[in-house]
Image (cartoon, rainbow, N blue to C red):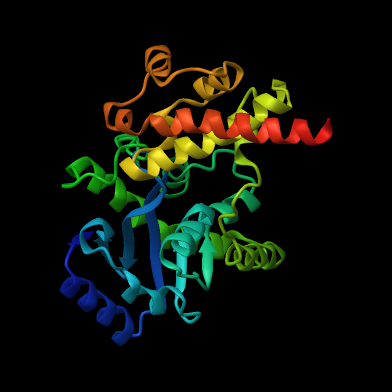
Length: 295
């Protein structure tokens, strides 16, 4: 199956024209993206499309703007055949404001058929008798780096290569009742979105064991870490580990120098470490004001 790497605006416009002008009613779709894994924030790193018998790998890291695909992705007349679609739906909506329409989630269909092993490799092997054991595990590799390796490109290609065949199998084997259930699930997928967690610092393991004052310190430390991570484009957990945040929340009145000695902090974050020291002061001031009002 032919593979085309799209890394210029002109190539992307040509692809857009192919899909819109050739009466395409179905595309295979997958994304490679990440959330605070190698960089700060949520990023789309690669868009994989199967259009008839061709595969296109769209590089948003190089192109920057993939908004020309918006009309295709939101076109209800074009079915988007996907596998485990929820994260990709959220990723497109959060990063590009694109709301996918007419989704067909293959994995959800095989779940309805009672398959126990729901990984793409397992299903392709069992249903299509294709040996996917050679497929390298690249899901957690750094998809932000360029150029992408041959192994990464092969991995990305395989994510959409067999989607149409799996969809055909489901259409033949699902009962009418199961098809109705799947249709309902696919409609619900369109509504998926990334929601900001309330008080995310309280989601950190060990935060439940802290007293009120320590939780207040943790809140300011968490926010300071986030600011540093955004400024240096690092995942927050690379700046200061969660377990270290808990230790620091318990140990107040620590100097910046002592902080650097007690925990591991990347060199790029060191010039901004005063933000952590300021977080201690803000937490202490807030706590003092509240306790004084009580008195």
